[in-house]
Image (cartoon, rainbow, N blue to C red; front, side, top):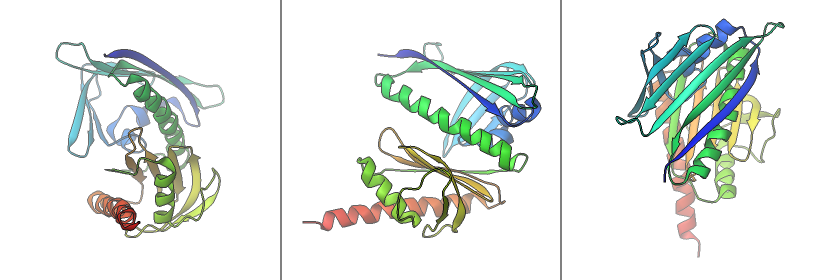
Length: 256
């Protein structure tokens, strides 16, 4: 049965409140670190939208108080199912900013698994926001979202991903790496995020994310700051992901 929930997160960012506002309350700002492609109508009662692939989720802006408070809410026609977000921005004496997030809503029958995925997802995205503000602030971004099925076993999934990226071991945060996927251009960078579900690499011109979904799927959530053609980059990464797991599945079928 549906289950109401609430997630609270806060993060200290090396940026001014105005810079944080631009990152969380504008379409180009969100495109540089969050999911999909985004639009925000800058007023209370305005429309916000996030598009991933062919799917667009719309919401209504419920608070617009720059650079202090931004909130939006999406709900079903009867209001029984909803998802709401509130961002609170507070400047610090040292010139940084505290950003607080409250997400609330209704999850489905498997709400505990979904809730755990939300908490872990926000840990990654808020870290990613910090990386954007520190290393790429103000640069226009090309968001790349690619999703595909993966093997159910986490160990097998990460072994295949590492093989496809040219990594001979599981890297740790702070390691310098060179990714050599077949198709997309090589990436030289540093591992800025590593967890059981995510490998994140920061290159000179992009944030690269390889994510294991809670349902066993694989998602690539990259943000490129090099001016690349978004469709060409997305096609290249999709072909790489599809070919990676098609090859591993064919190998498994040949085993006795």
